[in-house]
Amino acid sequence: MPHQTPHRRHPWIVLTAAIAAGSLLALAPQFSASAGEENDAVRAPAGSPVAENGQLRLCDTTLCTAQGKAVQLKGMSSHGTQWYEQCLTDGSLDALAQDWQADVLRVSTYVQEGGYESDPAKFTRIAQRVVDQAIERGMYAIIDWHMLTPGDPNANTELAKKFFTDMAKKYADQPNVFYEIANEPSGVEWSEIKSYAEEIIPVIRQHDPDGIALVGTRAWSSLGVSEGADESEVVDNPVDAENIMYTFHFYAADHDDEYLQTLSRAADEIPMFVTEFGTQKASGDGGDDFAMSQKYVDLMEQKNISWTNWNYSDDSRSGAVFKAGTCAGDEWAGTGVLKPAGVWIRDRIKG
Ligand code: IDC
Image 1: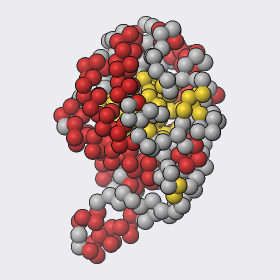
Image 2 (image 1 turned 180 degrees about the vertical axis):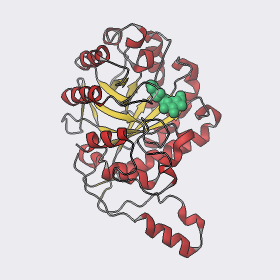
Image 3 (image 1 turned 120 degrees about the horizontal axis):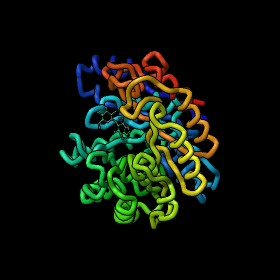
Image 4 (image 1 turned 45 degrees about the vertical axis):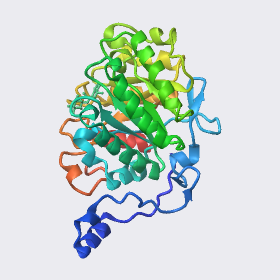
């Protein structure tokens, strides 16, 4: 998507000023650095994805702009903010918006594993800080409730209600946000996921009536395939709510044609958003299968399926796009800081 590149302070200027002032405080992230023409109504820099497309909605099974034109968003998912908050800075998000030309950032708030449940106020603050930075750059933001283990989303319903109330209240008037209510359910029937969705979506809509909700599917958002089912359980028994999409996740070195065909069939029947995928194994590690990944990317382009790739961090695994140690520095743009998966996915997003 074409972007206008707003003028930004070079990190060195900020650094030099900080040293001159003798104050470490000046090294704090510069949250209001965006310059250039602003569209006040949507707070998005001119030419950015949100300035161009506005509040999205569903046209039948397709994601559409405010003007009713089909749109495909491409971008990255963060890693869990409890581990990799340091990879989400003004500099890294400038690179994502301008160098990568991403349309969307998924902000992953894990529930367990030292995430939200351990300190709800802290993780809400982090999620809002990062969503605000995406908004300043005119990107869409997916607010990802990253439940994983346990796999039953109903295990966290009360926490989810609190989190999504806080988020939907804050972003009610912003066209940027999607609400992903359950990352990857597993070991639980579709009917249980559906009833969870029908409990959480009204909580969100009470504050943000036009926000699009993204609903995870059975078996790690495989539309059921990883537990021997398929998309028909969702197609035949959809969530009772408007303006929603279903998610599908894949890892190309593990998830072959059966998965690809399931996504393809599903996309003809129900709105699909691939909020997570990797070019490697489901562990997010190992060798990249770029040939299979390209088949998926082609299908998603052909069927107008939006996507975010896992993940925008410098974790040691091959699926984390940055080389280890990158997030401790201040260089983010270009390919020099990227692992092979990062070079590959940046090309696909820019293209
Ligand atoms: C993985 C991370 C890894 C972390 C682990 C913790 O890459 O660093 O230790 O989570 O649970 C998913 C999940 C996502 C996984 C990812 C790769 O949504 O949390 O991230 N994956 O394994 N589903 C399929 C793969």
